[in-house]
Image 1 (cartoon, rainbow, N blue to C red):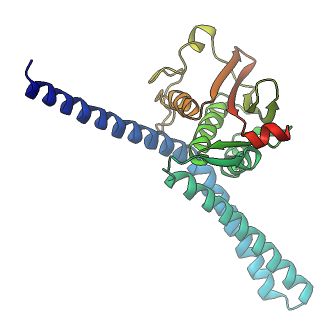
Image 2: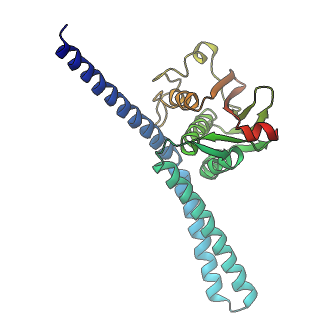
Image 3: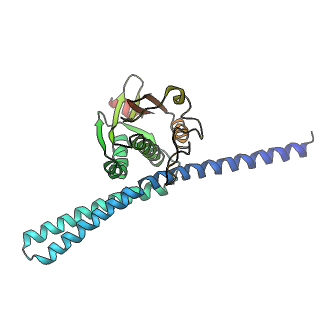
Length: 261
């Protein structure tokens, strides 16, 4: 084989690798937009509630001249505006974020930012959320990527409980392994053991897409595994039919966090 042929093949391989990288980025973005779509209805409903609050208390403030009632009206309007700003900031950050930079992050703060995005969706689907923050570890991660993993796991959990149920979110330390853990546990239908071995395979799915095209892509969990491996972490799953499913995200602790622990 001539040198020219070898160089041509190497160039072609490099081009294909670049295309694969671009396709992977597009898949990640598509999965993220799928999660945004799953939350859109609940977020729209929440904004409608916020606007109703703002309008009603604005009318109250205009109608009453007493200082006490006007102050109450302005306080309620300010609170509603801050709630809207929190949702908007979180959603824009989640939808637009594409940086790959990792940085020290408080895991509890990160989980709370995800809760701000999903709590209304859970309420509308009769899912009771319970949080268990046993520790507040600091880990090095890409906030947007881990947000995406958590949102996807929570949306999956909600879809596994079509008649409502219970969702537990926990943050804890595993001092034996020097790992921080985030657990997402639902009380849903569970996953049969023969399917459990394949759920991290790309394009493998246990559910049908709904009328809005949500679910059924088989991308979310395979991308979650890739993200966790890029963070030198792991994702584990436990499930029993009729009893629910629990996903555990495991992150290496920072040196400072290990010393503090």
